[in-house]
Picture 1 (tube, rainbow, N blue to C red):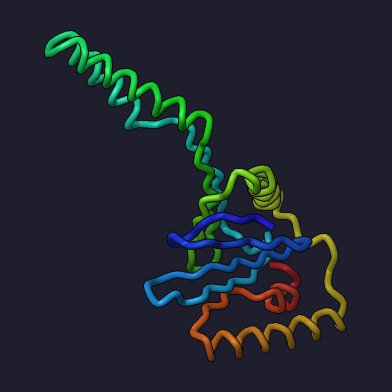
Picture 2 (spheres, rainbow, N blue to C red):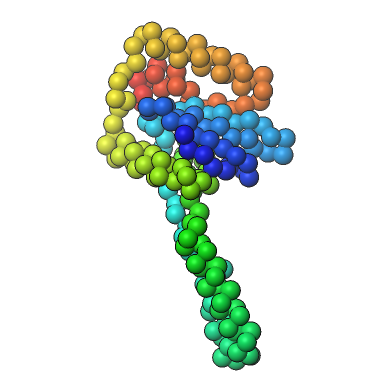
Length: 178
């Protein structure tokens, strides 16, 4: 399971084999967003490690200019603050996982604890996209029926709760993972 934040609230991405289940809440009214898909249905993936502080770098530059033109004390203070911001961001980078699924772009700021799992998922999806790989095991007829009934249950609950379901596991199984 990958944990993080999306839409300013806690979000999770559960991984079970090729199946991905995105759970988040969006909007001021906290509308639940549950999206079930597979790694084969993801159109694009990006993993971002933001480990530099642009603000800190700008502050270092401005501090250097202030020290040269206005006053040494103010310039040195700005440089020290800028270096502090740069060091802070280098020690605590922000991690983002971006998935393009159907008509949605899912963006999650991943926690440090889940960063390795999210990075591995992004690599796995890139390999799948590059190779055109099909699901590792074609579901049996019984599994497809179970997935369809689960999908119907998910869609019924989604309709009653105003939840969006994009590409369920049953849809992937019925189409052979394409």
